[in-house]
Length: 172
Image (tube, rainbow, N blue to C red; front, top):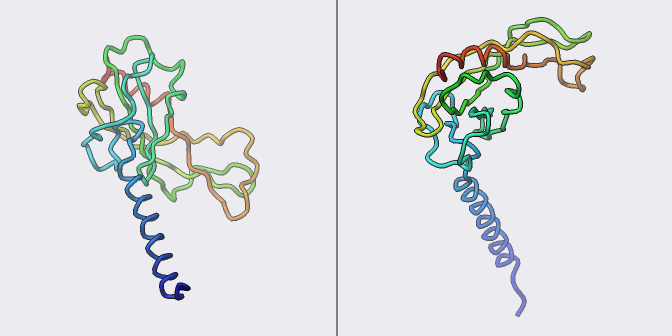
């Protein structure tokens, strides 16, 4: 007996719902790489993360995107940390964009003022040690002449030397 087009359509829709539901469930159950809150306005760290121990430097830095995705930026602190830190810490970095121009890079590329919010957690207890904001530095990335079509601005990069200065009183 041949299947009717309605039965095929219903089966296809059901399969689509199952696949979409599995994707949503997988994302909801995904363990984040660090215990940073998904949102800068939340002080409650994630209950679980795949970050089980602090790095050798004692400080982990993760950039948290607007959708909650996290990227390890610890390499940006390599060679910048003093050896006087007595606490291991997780630093969560959140970008806050602005339309304010700091200058230009190349002929038609604007450099935008960008603030970065930071939350600093003691690694072992997940206790919030401090939070602050820093203005990104106003230097153009090397090698920038023009951006691809449709893009006319760059966000200022985080000021990592200023970040280390702010960490000193929290971690010593």
